Length: 89
Image (tube, rainbow, N blue to C red; front, side, top):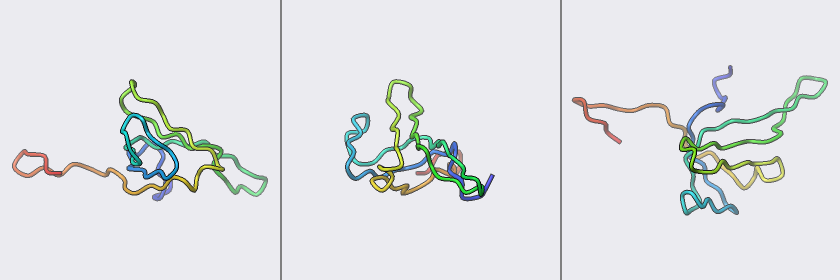
């Protein structure tokens, strides 16, 4: 797995022309997954990107290649900082 790969990571995504009814706005926190296709030379491209919520009551966001420019990963959740047993955000 490459160090730039987002597969399975929790990400903060900004979306321009998409309204996320679950979060009522233009940002979403979801788990990033994607399906890729490969050509004869081994080059890949996204078939689709799925932003999956951790809560099953919310809907996933499915992004197709022609919509990819409308979404931008702003951040990636990497860990929790604890000081004296308290979680600091």
